[in-house]
Length: 250
Image (cartoon, rainbow, N blue to C red; front, side):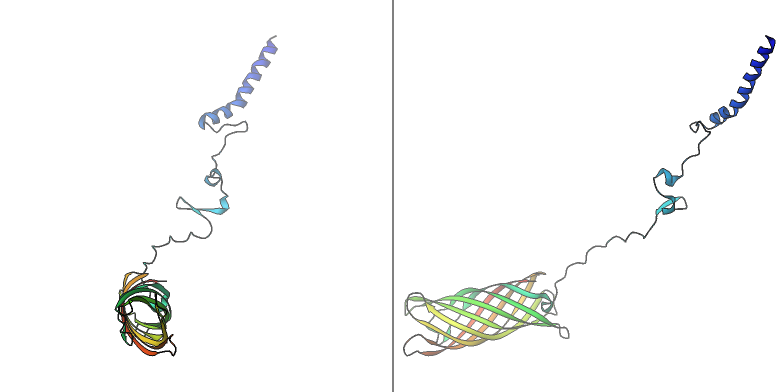
């Protein structure tokens, strides 16, 4: 009986001696206890879900591996109007405030009209800051014939060149010249005059926007034609014209 009691007490002492160190460790480091002993905190890269080979620690900061990101894009360049010779195409309308038939056309009264123009200016002469292009223009005006008590429609088709001074951004004077076709047709009478000639003129474009200009245009038309009578009558025409242009530049 005594021997059994002694054996049970020795077994209890041995159990306390074996389990005691583990309990002490758990008390020293709460939250890191497992069945196999204390746990160590996870590495930062593992806690973030990253491979430690892909990141660097520099002075306590976390940097991503690979090429550095591109620098942020700066503000866009401010838009400035390019010289006419570099703009390629320009197109727009013209309002003729005054068309004055003279010479053999003086039987017609002064008239007003409209038209449109399209041009292409591929050449830029940088030495004197100028540009040279080709343009096509359609012009139309109406004129009263008091003697015939009728109205005549005066149509002009023009093809020529335009040379502009592009040394200033906002104002561009220019010179123009070319060949032309002319036709005068009456509303009521069966009477028509047509023929070929030429023109020359000058003007100035005022840029109110980098892609839009308003201009003053003056042209002198000179031509020779014949009518539809039998035999046909021959005549010469001379007609100054003053207009206002509205052009878009591309």
